[in-house]
Image 1 (cartoon, rainbow, N blue to C red):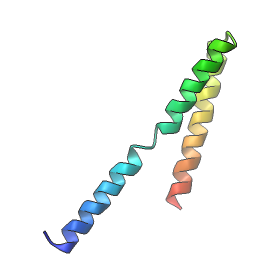
Image 2 (image 1 turned 90 degrees about the vertical axis):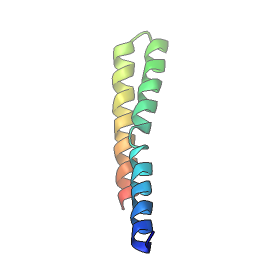
Image 3 (image 1 turned 90 degrees about the horizontal axis):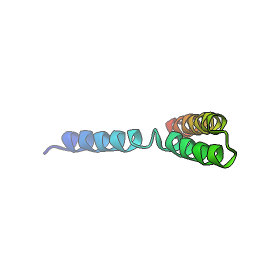
Length: 67
């Protein structure tokens, strides 16, 4: 295996690692939203807030990693 092939393999592995983290905060926000929704007896508002917070955190972290 040449050095160029090894370098390409490393780049592909790094790309796969970054794509697996994209939905992490969205899932966490959704889970927290469901918990708050059940606790406050208003699942719709809790879920909406959880998704909004999770999506914004996900976008913020992805943009921060690109710089």
